[in-house]
Image (cartoon, rainbow, N blue to C red):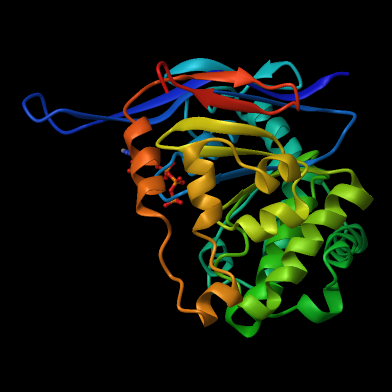
Length: 306
Ligand SMILES: Nc1ncnc2c1ncn2[C@@H]1O[C@H](COP(=O)(O)OP(=O)(O)OP(=O)(O)O)[C@@H](O)[C@H]1O
């Protein structure tokens, strides 16, 4: 098995303020994960707001450097501090998909212009027919076409269509990994599943791996192969998505699952989770603990004396 992405004991500390009011945030602490070339998968990062998901994603994309540890893609260290050609080569293999498609596109620039400049930059295409074929090919992969997208400004598309166009743009260089940071949270609920299913078909039909960052346990359960659950910068549970979500073991993972409101719970007015469970999960956050492998293949953070 060869390694596509290797995140090894990575931490990120942000330091803010001046000399007298210095404050540090441990955004990510000692995170490790790896994806293989041979098995494309949807690897999900779940956690509450501020748990370090985006920081981890930005380090994987080389937009942020780890304070400790190392990230490598196909054996090469990921960093933005490399030459332009090396950076472009990396970006051809690893593409981001952002949360808000309306922010990802300049409102004054037509969609096809974006796709065209990506095709020029990464595929070095120059002729009109070649550019059109590359754009149409990418748009077809996401259920759109160049005929539909040509000449349209971002505001002339729905959020769902625009997120598809953003994914089409990311697909132009033929990447082997997409890093999608909450790609459905700004899309209308009724269109969300179409984007989620699209990510699934990118994995199954195009063999593209996806790092899927979300707050949403339901979509994570539906499309993920494996996942990690993060709490305040630390991975607290990691493993096969269904094994973990069917029977979460870490108190924080249990709390997350218990916080998902079913329509039945809403109907019966049951809006609160067990306060004891929340207290246990937050008390543990102050301890470092240790990720321990379990026989069922998952890893769970355990604490001394707990
Ligand atoms: N550039 C930065 N400078 C200082 N602190 C930062 C920076 N980026 C992130 N942080 C802090 O690091 C922690 C983790 O943030 P991060 O955005 O990675 O979390 P998240 O899980 O993605 O949250 P959300 O779901 O709200 O996007 C937070 O406490 C955040 O305030």
